[in-house]
Length: 87
Image 1: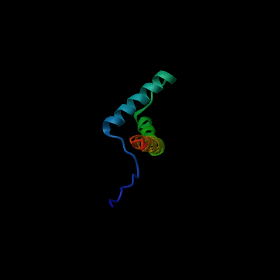
Image 2 (image 1 turned 30 degrees about the horizontal axis):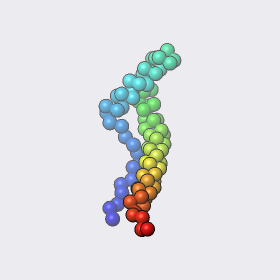
Image 3 (image 1 turned 120 degrees about the horizontal axis):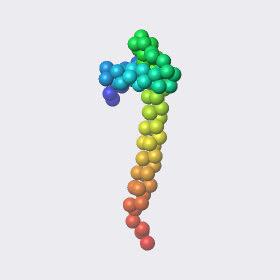
Image 4 (image 1 turned 45 degrees about the horizontal axis):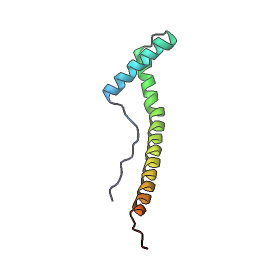
């Protein structure tokens, strides 16, 4: 059996990080009418990576598990639908 690697921390790619920085900058400007500095942007992204990303990741795993369970239930009923009547 293959051993799984644990995910100690979720990391964004450089492109994802830059896109998030742009979104943060735009949010502060549009919603609050404030300019936000680069250091504050970096701190917010790090906070998101550390605190929010694992919550979202775990939720996605739970959603995938529920989808898989439903798919297996459907497979089970589809399997029995293939049985022939023995009359």
